[in-house]
Length: 319
Image (tube, rainbow, N blue to C red; front, top):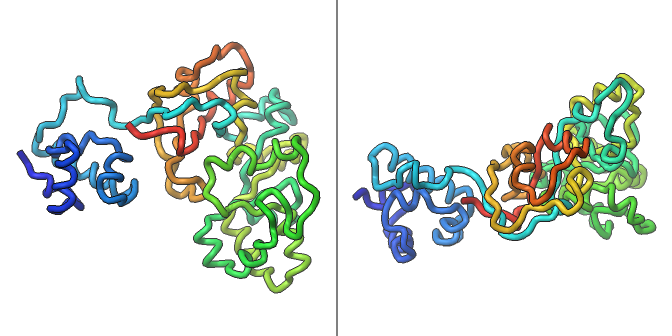
């Protein structure tokens, strides 16, 4: 039997800890859940735990070290829901072109009204940011390029109000705001309301270069209703975007992933740095088969089939 110490990152102390908790072979480590490994390895984090498991799987594959046969082992990738996940807790992500069912229009007017489309932030350099816009930027990049901006934004009460304060948003406004339904999948500190940017441009001319840097490095989310689909340039822009919708704007009433549901999925690309760690992406066609609801003939479900769903990190564990 190959010793655990042969696994990348596992020395005498960690090997002893793994054995104490029942992981006595390379094969058992190769099939351990990521979260469990991260906890056992003195809280090293999911990335290091993933490296440890990958090393164990490589050794097991090369040496044939007591790894369970494919017939009896669980799938290598996928997730299990840890609680009931109602549609409102999930975010549906689809390509913008899925909305363009005909020239100058859409067959999904209600979902589109509540959609948020991601466009390059630098596009705002040519026009004035408005309350219909929220800018996302990687926190580490923003902190490095725009240290003064963080200090200026400290006046804001939260990510849904402009700098300097204003009347609270209505329920309808909150329903369409990025923070109201993406909060569970976004990294904290990345949301900058468009009207906050507009206010800062007016109040703090000394921050203009930092604000421009944020826009160049960020992504602007525009509400669907802010697009003029009759304009060819707007339609072309929409076709190149990704769009986000709260799950219950697309899925049938009562749709949910029940606790313990087995889901295929994969973590979003690492360049999607505005997403929180642990967010799980489920392909749309497979998500429909895992939902506890009658899919029915709702035309909005075509949007989910064209894309996928993001589930918040507290709702799933890797299997």
